[in-house]
View 1 (cartoon, one colour):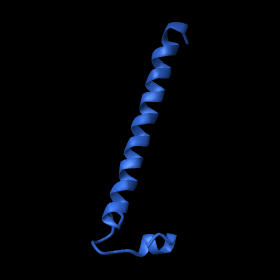
View 2 (cartoon, rainbow, N blue to C red):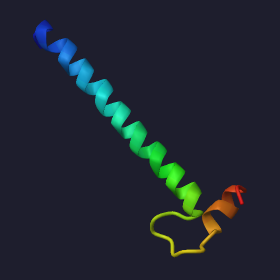
View 3 (cartoon, rainbow, N blue to C red):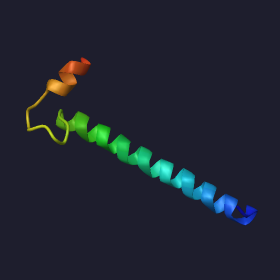
View 4 (cartoon, rainbow, N blue to C red):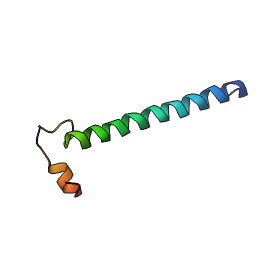
Length: 54
């Protein structure tokens, strides 16, 4: 790999890592706010009870 591509590729790598971290973080916040996971019906607290969070 040419050295001139090293910096843009490293920047793309860190940017994609930051995007994934934001998506996961917002997903966790949404799940905590809704008290359920996306595939569970409303009012389902089994996941959080199993973790001891509710």
